[in-house]
Length: 314
Ligand SMILES: NCc1[nH]cc(CCC(=O)O)c1CC(=O)O
Image (cartoon, rainbow, N blue to C red; front, side, top):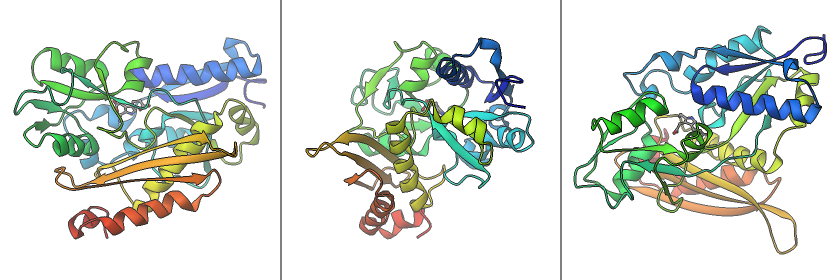
């Protein structure tokens, strides 16, 4: 049975509005690359554990696995042929029998501030809602006076909480807002002020390592520069042994150098959770130099205080 030919290709996704849009983007890319009819693919929406928990920071409950566990099970048991993920929510270390076979071209990597024009413009002591240790630490680094409080829920819920005055402001990924047709919401925060999370803005599609036919379908739609950049960011993250408690930012991009060969620029930041210390570095290395991103992590930890090292278990 060839998926897509003898039966529909089953694409697993979370059920949240953002996940559904992203899965449809992946489906569309496969359909157009193969010249298929719409009914040759089928979306299989599933509820992730993380979607049911709204009152605690996910980092305190079980981290990124909350987003992938149910889809992982469905993939392993053959209920779906592939799973679409926000790469930002995918653990750095994945089961060996799974392969991230494609990434769609990365969207806007920036974070957006909702509820104020700039971080500077926020009133003294303003309440900013976020569940991200990275955004919290970065905000406090610029504005130690801010009152950072936990906010959960999907994008629509968060916007409502700000409109209702429960929070003065919040920060959301531009990619998610744009994909939900809420591109007018908020103001872009520069990457110099707020470097994004590793993998932000990237959509990945995972399948079983031995599913050669599905891997071929996915390979045909993969955006090579996005793939390389995100792998560099994830290599950096893995070397830090960071988890979702850890305030870490990383952003890579592929660019051409003077000799017209491709190189990767990787910028990264690690912080203490209260923003009182941060180490920022960047490197440029040839595409294919897989060790370089890992080396950057070692170099940055070398510059960190004992307290900051301890955040990464050193
Ligand atoms: N952690 C939740 C999450 N995972 C991916 C996105 C946005 C889409 C993306 O980064 O690709 C978001 C929401 C947010 O951070 O605002």
